[in-house]
Image (cartoon, rainbow, N blue to C red; front, side, top):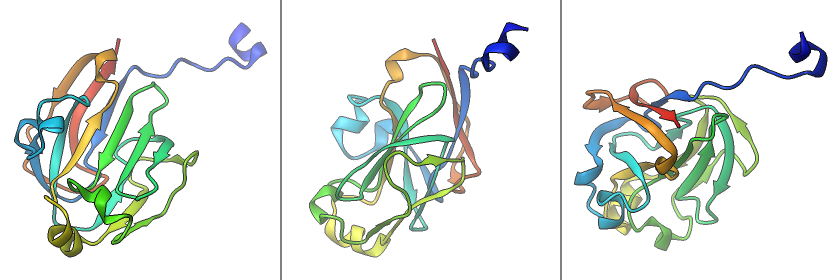
Length: 166
């Protein structure tokens, strides 16, 4: 009764499913050719070797960061999970060339919404790797992380992991 009177909503689920933001091949985090990601210094996650230059939202939530160089986007789910999608490695040096954003900081997105387009050929030429990490930057507040057994990923559709907040 009080919830209805005072506009309180039901608490958000602590468990969410993260789908692949990019179509391509699954790469285990330990196999990402960058020690910052491979050694989980930024958090738990996985990588993708893209076969298509589109990034879709892997979760529903708020866009909390769009890097000025457009190579990375941060999203925060309603339950507090914070996700970083980093297209390629050493792509910050490209200064935005080959990237086109479709969202801005503060936007609310739904799982599967298009966030970003990128030029795979240009990244392969200019950056150290096309492999794109997807990292839970606050993975220290998770009580459970479950990876699905996937090899080929479809953006906005293929479940890759389920995580639960403490």
